[in-house]
Amino acid sequence: QAKLPALVQFATGNQRLNPLAAVSGGIGFSGDQTVGLWADASSALAWSIPHGFDSPAEFRPRSAAGVLIVGGRKWIAAYDLVSGAEVWRYMAQIQTGVPYVTESHVVFGDGHVITALSTRSGALQWQFAAVPDTLVSYAPTGTADTVFVGPGDGHLYALALEDGALRWSLNVQDQWQYLRQIQIEGDVLVAGT
Image (cartoon, rainbow, N blue to C red; front, side, top):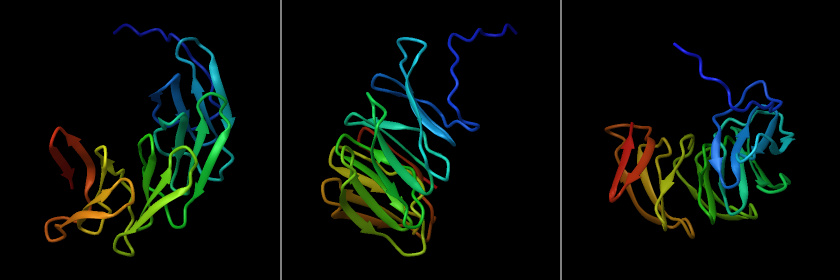
């Protein structure tokens, strides 16, 4: 088979790099040492900076509200898409899970507590406690006004995006424990176990 030629290559300063993400203005990246943005209209890095945490970024970057959200099991942080300046950081109380990012909220688990921060400022918006001694590791998903979370306690929760109020919960712990890869397609919510 013919080998495809590389169109562009750039160094990120990481030994381990997470999956890249198409974001506004380029391609976001994060790894064990740095976070940055490759300007996809050229072969140049828009910016690349050391993230300064003692543990690696482990999640695919996400962007909204003019920031790039990156993080790992001990932290989540936001960086300005234009300058690369750190806008806010959140340090885990127990362990952070993969975030769900909207223009207004970053929603993720910290241990058994589902936490929502302001996407732009990082200010705490709300928290919802699931069953203690579980870990909300997998990313929630949502609609314009509802977040769906399967935190590993045998429940599927529907929470109001604005304030975290419980809309409904489904107790299916007799059938499964962990819900993973929660997806929405049209009017259908698929929660795999």
